[in-house]
Length: 184
Image (tube, rainbow, N blue to C red; front, side, top):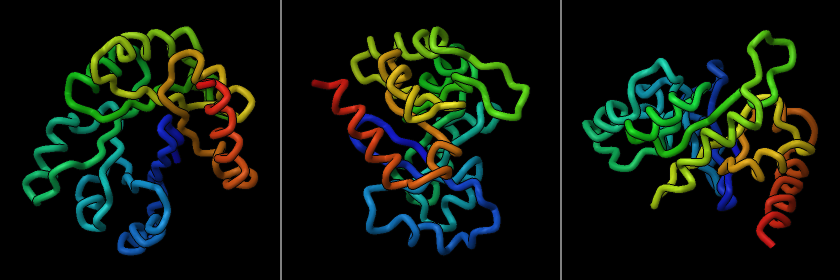
């Protein structure tokens, strides 16, 4: 799940056991867009709003071609990135947003944290562009440290545990309140 500036919530499906046809219904009625991780075919089959690609998946531009071939004209396409160079490549290939991290590391995993300095670098040139591609912070992000990510230039917050642990409505409300405080 991802929270981004502009108060948009994106729901990414990682649960392979959920029936594909029930996914769009679970997001309807909310201000959400449903993205399927890595599986363009599943995204198309279930009528999802787009796809969230790994950095080693098909390029965002190629994903757009596949969607267009079946009549989907404006899918949301995000790319997971772990380096500043991957963020630049995702943007050059037409991604709508990048999910960057792990900023603070992942609990229980050996993946090294990219850190706030790297997040700032990944976000800096995007903010300078006329139509910047948002870079969302992921990895060890909590309600407490999310403000550091947004102050560092992130266009939003992405998380799994952040949105699974505790009360989802309360977590989103806290993030929105924090974001409003930044824009005052």
